[in-house]
Length: 157
Picture 1 (cartoon, rainbow, N blue to C red):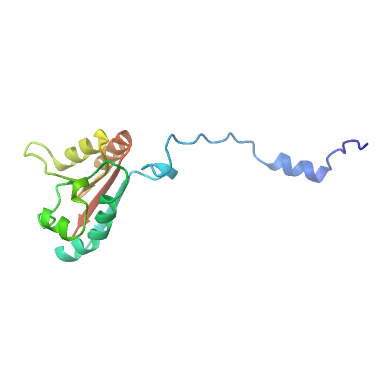
Picture 2 (picture 1 turned 180 degrees about the vertical axis):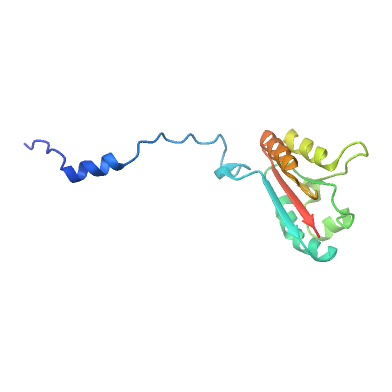
């Protein structure tokens, strides 16, 4: 029969040096959800060049977003005029999962983006706001968190 051996001083120092910390609480998200892994729900892309070049660069990103299996809409708020229904079809986007919104005269585009995000019926709301100041960014972040959606702003220029 073996008796338990006391820990050697060198072993004790290793355990004493380890900081005592509380385990972090995981977020209430499921894998593949917009906020899994702690990703911020607001992103911004800046594209420079001609309108056709910018649309050429946007096409694969929007196509991927339109073909996701989330079941919610890809919403485009106040897109440029050359991003038409015909362009969506030619670019191979799933038009059955895309919602195009234009703000009314009384409503600013940023307000419409916040409303679309907050409702949670869209997995991603793409906007063309310029510039996005600190207060607008905070409103977009809060609305995206509320609706568990992603906000993507595209700056052309």
